[in-house]
Image (cartoon, rainbow, N blue to C red):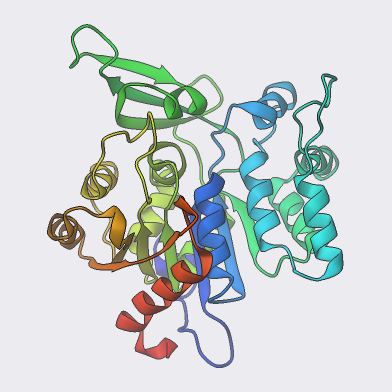
Amino acid sequence: MSAAQNGHAAEPASAERPLRAVALGGGHGLQASLAALRQVTSDITAVVTVADDGGSSGRLRRELGMLPPGDLRKALAVLSTADDSGRLWSQVFEHRFGGNGALAGHAVGNLLLAGLLDVLGDPVAVLDETCRLLGVQGRVLPMSAAPVDMEADVVGLEEDRRAIRTIRGQVAIASTPGRVKEIRLFATNGQREKPIATPEAVRAVFDADVVLLGPGSWFTSVLPHLMVPELREALVATQAHRIVVLNLVPQPGETAGFSPEQHLDVLSQHAPQLRVDAVLADADSVPTPDRLRAAAAELGAQTLLDQVATPTEPGRHEPGALAACLAAALERRMDWWR
């Protein structure tokens, strides 16, 4: 789908409307980017991966055939309003049942989303309704309206360390002790067909002023969006300012031993046509800045290094610092936003 096919090119942000931001990812990484974007704009759309097959999400997915709700729930909770009502609903939404019974391990929000889906049928309508309940000013969308299956080529698991083994399932890939070389996504129908993007997510990418990829689990939360053909094409063609936010530390299993620039190399391997405008990274997490700048330049991007980690939790982004870094990246290239 081109910008013309989408119906119109995105008009620039102005005094009449806030910056339109789209963040793609899943899990804690997406929560970090959404928390930062809340300090930059009120018009935020989260596009969430739907490959999770573990925990409460995996159980509901297997039992009901529904989208795994966990990452969707987390995005909704981050974007909920800060008034008393919003805080209460957000707290209840995130509450997880204990004990050993049938509900043990399930988050209330996961069950609410399951119930709404049973009544409404359409996952986009379910998420829009939940946004109204929580007072979310933006939007939360699944990258696909149906759950997807993930598989990866992994090396380092056999006696021959170069031998490739295929690992299936998001949780298994995220926790593999081997090195992930490539991932693939398929619709959950046994036919190994490519997943179909949610039209609303594609439209959001085309209409955006800024699009964020990362931070997050690189192979299982960030790259999956590039494995959905319509979404990848939208990310390649959009006129939005495309920003990649790198992780603070390698993730055990998925990216153990990866340098910051290797994350960009993998991104390019999975989407060779993708161009990026800016790469943001924590200065203390980049041992060789010149190598990162060179890798970013290969994608067409400038590199912005700053202190964006939470001092007491080095593995987590500090929302205010990340927001300031995002604003600086935008001001460098988007004079109309000043």
